Structures are given as structure tokens and as C-alpha cells.
Image (cartoon, rainbow over all chains, first blue to last red):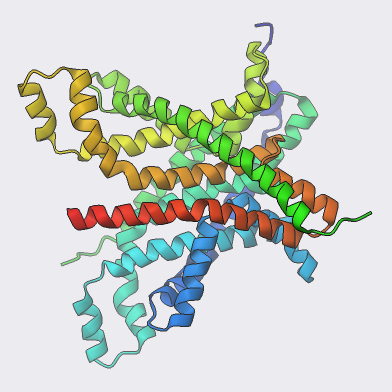
Length: 222
Length: 216
């Protein structure tokens, strides 16, 4: 082996990579928040008694869950402008990731809602509460609490998936790493450091979100 | 001249889909074999081995598949190994698969009641037979739905091969979108092909899971 490792250029470009980290966090957190919100809508449609919303929701969820996110982002970023919907790389990335996240979030949240005992919901209905009020006051918090770990892994998954957004040149971590690669040709070192940074990010969020969850959901259940 | 997206173009996408399927099967087979080793290591006696496997799994679950593939594709040549894109992708996807399947199968092995293993030991059955004839067949049943779900993830993951330049389904779509200037139709078609490859698997997995839950 005659290759000399040189991590110098990678660390010299640290400010650029830091911008990338921020970009990655922006993409994944924005699309996570919007994705969960949209996912809740799909979840409500999925569990409703009416056939039409139910079929639409199931179709959407299955379509998203059975196609690669890479194809979804290509469809959004290259395909939708044909319909007159123009967007920047970042907007396209956030839109694609939100649409993707919504399908997964809908299924996760549905699991949580189904864990609520039906007596609770019936009690709400007996008190004459509106469906939305039942969701708001009775179902959501315990439901989210029940599936909080799954939502956390979904966020970390979104963060890792956001690396694919480099393919439409959204400015996130992998995008900057590739830029750096074309400037310095230090591929091995760059992708090694890139892997380490992602690993640190996912470990950090896995612990941090757990702590947040413990604080936020620390009320007694019984 | 700009071509329209018609049946000939769709056939081109299907040609690409063939490589998506081949790549998935190769990675699943190699990764599955390695994954079994990872899973067995993860439930083995020596604490060091278990910790090592846990770190291995953590590395692959904590970094994006794209970065893993880049690392293999650009890293191996530095070690003096000349890698063909197929070799790089097979290695990258197999390692990725082995970590995920290893973790899934660890869970299913541990879900087999401990009495089974103890009974086998009491009968004087050695490690190999205890694992392969007693524990693993039962673990297989438990782990099947999750394994199939992962296969779906793997098929979707092979789309990343397009970013390294292998002409599988997604890359065929990119090429076709550039020729026809009809990205909406092309990527729609690409998505549908993936959908019809993955949907039966998803359906299978959900069915098996439901049946297992009823049996329990």
C-alpha cells in the first residue's frame, strides 16, 4: 500500500462541513415536523369510517413506503416543474422528505392511537366531544408517548436519508463533502470523516431525544 | 431529436429493473450469510465478541447507506484493490445488509424461549445442532416479517447504485428523463416499477406478521 493518508485538507475545510451539518439538521428537522403533521392527517384519514379518504390514505402510504426516497426526490425536483411548480433544490428536498416522512409517520402514529383503550374514546364521545377534540384532549399525548421511540428512530432515519438530497444539490453535509472531494481528491479521508460525523450526529440525537422524551412525558400514567 | 416516452422507453426501464433485482438478490444472499454470523456473534458467550458486533451494527445503522457505498467505492482502490462497480456495490450493500439483518435476527433468536436452548443442552446437543436444529428454525419464523420488510428496504436502497453510476432502474430513469425531457412520466414510471416489485413483499410480510400474532 503506497497511499499516504492526509486528513489535513478535510479538517481545514471544517467551516464548510459545519455549514453542511447545519444544512442537514435544517432539512431533517423541518421535514420531520411537517411530515409528522401531514402524517397525522393521513392517519386520521386512514382510520376514518369513510371509504374515500381511507382508500386515498392507504394508497398514498403504500406508494411512498414501497418506492425509494431517491426516486421520490427526483420525481419532485425534476418532475413537478413540468407541471409548473418550480422550486429550489432545498425546497424540493424538504418537500420530498416531508412527503416521505408523512407516510411513515402516519403508520407510526396510527400504532400509538390504536394503543389507546377504546373506553377512553367512548367516554369522550359520551361527553359529546367532537372528534377533533377527542383527538386533541384524549388521544394525542398518550399516543405520541407510546410511539415516541419509533418517532425518534424515524427522525434519525430522516437525517441519514437527507444525505441523498445531495443528488439534487441541496446544500447539506454530503453535498459539501462531495464538493470538497472534487477540490482535494482526498476521497477516502473525506468519506471516512463524513461517516464519523453522521455517526456522531445519530448517536447524539438518539441520546438527546431520549432525554427530551423522558422529561416531556414524565407524567404518571395511572 | 427528442424522443417521446413510449413503450420502447418503458422496456428500457424494465431492463434496468432487472439489474435492480439481481443486485438486491446478490446483496441479500451475501449479506444474509454474513448477517447470520453477526447475529450469532451478538448472542454469543464472550462479552468482547458481543460488544464488537454491537459496534459493527451501530456503525452501519448510524451512517447513511450512501456514505457507506462511497466509502467502499473510493476506499478500496486505496488498499490496492481494483474494484469494479459491481464488486463495490455488492460489498457495500452486503455489509449494510449484514448489520441490519444481524440486529433483526438477534432479536428473533432472543425471542425464542430460553427453555428450548436449555433443553437442548440438557440433552447433550452441541452448539451447532442446538443452534441450527433447535433455535434458528424457531427464530426464523419470528424474524420472517421483519426480514422481508428489510428486503424491501434493500431493494429501495439499491436505487443509490444510480448515484455511483450503475445502470439499474433509477439510473435508467435518469438517462431516459434526459433523453425524453419528460421527467414527470419517467420518474412516475420508475416509481411504479419499484412499487410493483416491493408491494407483494410488503403484503407478504404483513400477512405473515398477522398470522404469527394470531398464533401467539
